[in-house]
Image (tube, rainbow, N blue to C red; front, side, top):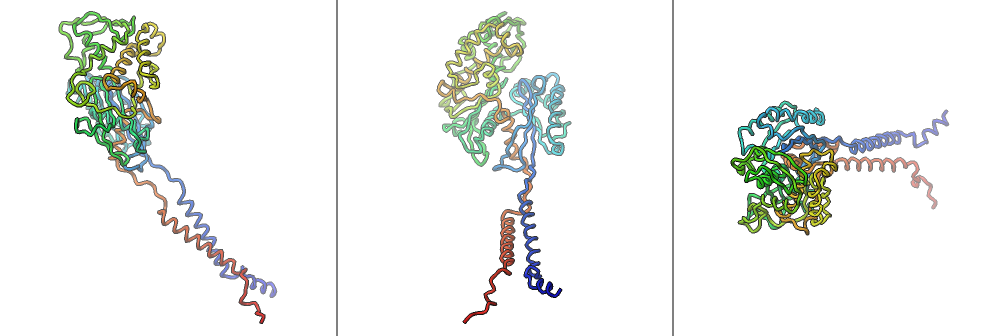
Length: 497
């Protein structure tokens, strides 16, 4: 026993100091691993949501947007997560029964209730923006417009979101926010790339917006909009033409052909063989053409098609005034427009019409586009119906006019040529989000929505590095000290003289 006790006492690993070092080392290692795991664990992402209702002239659409609570350069990274097309016409169509304008939104709003997390409902902003359809109704009958908005607001306030109001967007806002959407989705704003112009075509209005080196706002200040996004400033040219959306442009074209009050017209903008009886009061039931209605006209007229692209283009051109211009350069109707610059994105009706006509690929030369349009317009109506059995006849009948109008608007109105026409890209969606003004609107509004403080790591980076460094040094010192029993005991060796 005494021999074993003597060996134990001589064993350096059984000394109290060594045991203490070992315990400290184990604790240090556990602490280092714990700190590293806690500091580098993935953090749950917090999201905010926003809902925008686009109340257009022909229909209403709901969009849900989502973005991280943290921000990039004070601009939230917004993405579309869901869209819902409201059944029925635009809210301006319910002027005589405003209650139904609000009721029509219910189904899509129920979808929004399910799509947005319940705990976020009360803080999710809800906006309704009305565009050219309501602009026209407000011009024609402001009292009816107010009643429609009242019905819409009452309907939206019943849902658990933070309703921020319903209002009419100005044409300038619609164009500018459409420009923001196109460039945001293309990552041109974040990467400070050359921006893309925006071409928007709706049912009642059309917008053009782009950045031009020739435009500083001095010649036509009303067409200028300044933005600051992702730390960069943008001076934008934008203009909206009310009554020049494709539906109202068609009314103007028909009005030009029926000003004498005929009982029938042969329309070059409709396919040969097309025939329909139309009511004068419906054609002229719009502020865009109401002052052109012929006196003493019959109740109806027979509308027949003859399908001639070049003649249709001549009729369409009569909607534009190219003679009046008090500026250095104009688009049409005396409106200033600087030199076109850079690529453009064309969306909404631009895309849907050109895609239907298989002309959305702008690698097709402009001359070939007009040739294909000419052949389409000349195709007999019966053949068109056979080729597209699933399309509503009302929309199908208008494609010859709509295609001709688009090409005329771009080339004669906005001054695109065969050289820069390929710079246009017809787009429906970019990275899963619909092209249009609503995303730009929501993106702009995130600057006014306070960002949540993000979940932060337990330690600041400098503190984390310091702790890891101290523990590492401690472990290294303990390791060196643990080797002490193995050090050569030079001082105890007998010296030979």
